[in-house]
Image 1 (cartoon, one colour):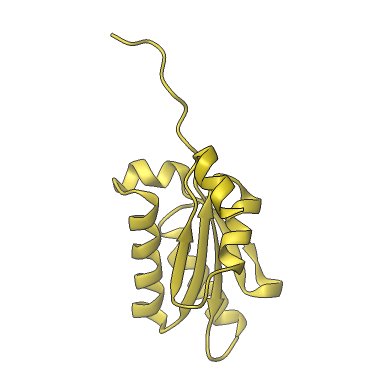
Image 2: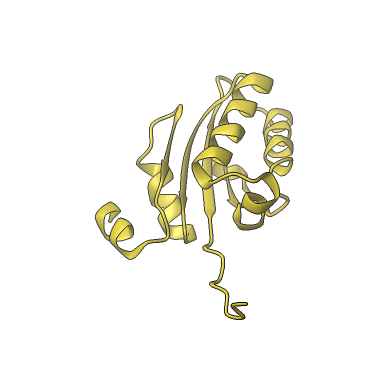
Length: 121
């Protein structure tokens, strides 16, 4: 039995919401949808975005980062008609850069791999 285990790679998501009309109530509803995927949410209401730590949620939901982000984007669109742009990566800064480079209705995922990170940067 192997007693050494590799640490789980971190998966941080930055998601920007792009609603037709911005209200406090809607922002709260969108955060509730995100909280249904992962309870590790840091709201950023000033720019209608949020950080989400997906690391533990990946195991819970049995999905990879792309799959879990797709589920979240689909829920936001189905429940509230809100498009979003999402960026995921091993750090907050990479997730933020990926989200900023992504148009509404899409997602960019940068895996926790030095070569993939270098290619993205």
